[in-house]
Length: 283
Image (tube, rainbow, N blue to C red; front, side, top):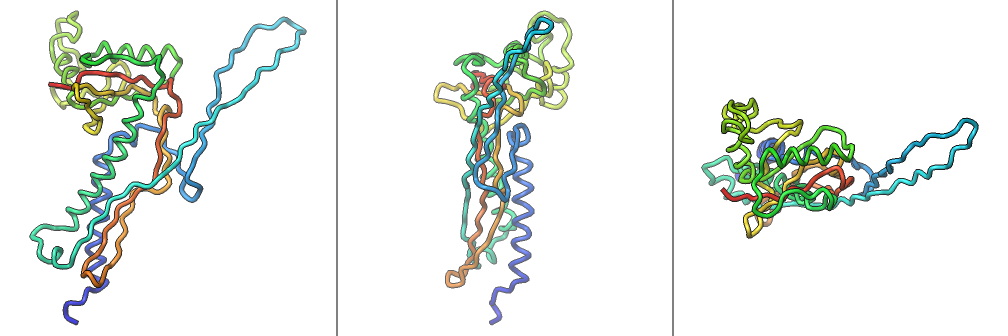
């Protein structure tokens, strides 16, 4: 009985897993804070988001009846589904490892779930309104291209804030030009944005757009990627169950199953509130 696994030893191990996994998820996810989250905990697995149309007012003559204006909202339904990852940690592996194996498992699980969320959300950029397409295959990301996106959204009366998310390899050219004397060749001094890039390595805010880098954006076989400039309401994340770790003891195997799961759904809610920007992602 000396080798019997006790509840005390298990609780210590799994506390380490939960702490590390949640920490990793929060530090790794880029897209989640930038979109609109709909909490459907304790409800069904779907959320319906009503989208009201834009209506116009017109001048009327005194004493004249106003004509009826139909206000007929459309609806966007987002369905949540599960994603997960599992491993089986044997007693011998746990006891023989020279590393804190519980923390390592937590790190791997947290990064896996975070990457899945980011990949799913960033994959929606290509579904923004067709009229909002900018850039093209082989086009470098420049400040001018971001300004075109800002102007496109402003012309559609899209309110701020605006976020831009691109692969780090796509942002390379933007950083390179910003750290030259005048990113458009019209100034002789380095811009304040360029100074920020020199000092921190981050673009930060340009033209009122917060610029983020996300390595979870896919690059196609030609070396191009699709980034996005968007308002948070353009993309919806239906959160049914946030990141969770569960354990189950398998006594006959002398091991414990460790399962990480999350239940969510994602979709474009307002397709004209974002611009898809196709740019080169080769260095």
